[in-house]
Image: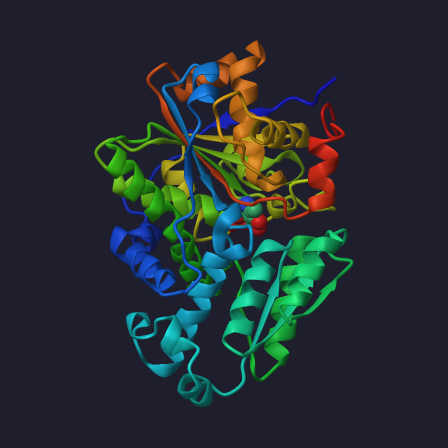
Length: 402
Ligand SMILES: Cc1ncc(COP(=O)(O)O)c(C=O)c1O
């Protein structure tokens, strides 16, 4: 018996002004995109059209943004950490980020002006890898703490970037507090965390803008194709990514904003529960899920107001949904291109597939208004960042029914 997918429609009270929306204006996001474009490894990641899957699901089109190609790091996360670190440096030097493209940022002159900095963070894997990579590129140090149970392959990838990294016995939210404490004790330390809390908002704001590069690329490409999305499905851990995507697209298509669904792992569904209770609530405990990137029990406080104001629906998805999405994408219908999508990357496709196939989810389909003329965008936010588990799911059918 499969555990059910749960959902709640957003009926939370709305306010007229949501200041965090200013974070995600097209102008702010274009700045981040311009910064990322200056990297020699920059390439627009593919926006893959999956016409056969769309037809099977009874919608007009399905576009998937494939972030497994991002900077050879196989996840979108580096966009946030690298941009926040560059903004931090720009602020320290009293310059605008536009004066600090990659070439300048990595120069001897900048290194000399900055001296030594140690960037601290906590991570399930992808964010820490991005921070470690960016620190390494800047010839600075990084210290990375991972939650209990983190995959060996993910730790190894962070160590390879020269970080001092370790797996702790804490859950993600506790590891964030620990990283914060350690950074505060280090005179050269600065925490680059991909979530906000009261009093810590500037860096996570930059991180959300950095993720905007991905939305900006999607927007540009859809505009070239002459299509507008009617629906977006985006996954959430702390919700920085979801707030970034929601904030950007609500403004980019202000006349007819897409219906946005936020999808979380059932074991760490703090946004879903908050929407249900109309109040920010936290999920504690081990947060055990195969969706390591989504195993966060505490919402980003600057992203939540954006989601609360604009998102249509919050979904709590058991692990089988992610595993299904991985298989649907990895073994596609004839004529569709295969996509290597990891656990946190594939859950939105898994949800769409479940909605399309099972009568039990007809209500959700109706609430969202998914129809024959719907144009859906999903973000596959990572590739096979844990290759062992990827194969156990694709080849051995693991997590098909739990
Ligand atoms: C692959 C992947 N997708 C999605 C997310 C969710 O992002 P957020 O924590 O901003 O909600 C993460 C977070 O680490 C991730 O690694």
